Image (cartoon, rainbow, N blue to C red; front, side, top):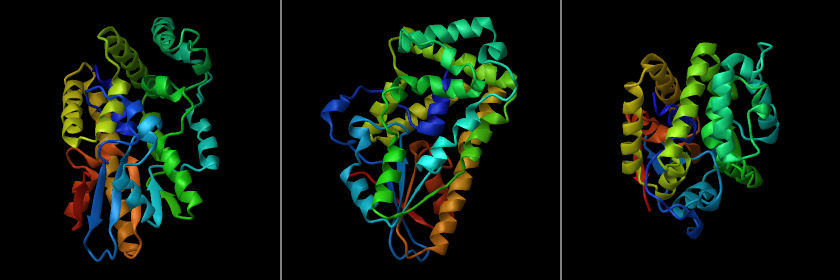
Length: 310
């Protein structure tokens, strides 16, 4: 199941594509991942905005169309609450509660493989800081570690803090436990497979001269949903053909199908109860593209969804 680590990037970063982009030369993404919501008695349009869960260079700035939609909205909703108190409390969800260290759980051989990959990110880095973490947490973290160590705030956090400073209503479509439950329910054996595939995928990409995380960033900056969708379909197809097909299907269902339905219901309920309030729903872009995405589900509920590309 080669794209296991990329799957998690799809789930929480939600995009993947190819094509190099010199991010430093751009002030903001080329196109916004932005959709307008109208219909069913809405007095002012609301918005679906696809985020990426890192934030540096042009990613940290909104495209002018998205910026205008954000400024014109009275309420901003991210996937989970991004306030400091909630974020500080998240650490408890990542800590092992079985009395084992990470190496105890995954074994010496996989630990060595993990250490080798960590050192490609930073020669001084090994698995020592991760010994208290759940196995799935390390699997999710590994693909994004290169970017997370820069200390930059995620775009989601940037939007939340900006909304708070502007005295907008802030809220979230999910609770942190909703997301963590996707992985906490996995058996330890499944988590070990997950981590093993994450390590292997990182190694294969590196040896091929590829950087999947940079590809995510480049795709987001391009804002080309056709390319994003094509890459997602390619990766998901590969995953479905792997050795751990059932585990792959389980994660795909939990990351996309289940969450898309829940998000669409939350948004529809919010629009129905507050039809005079323009809302800005900022979640991972993968929830707004592909089959049975949030926009499609809202369309089935009677709303008009229009992509804003410039």
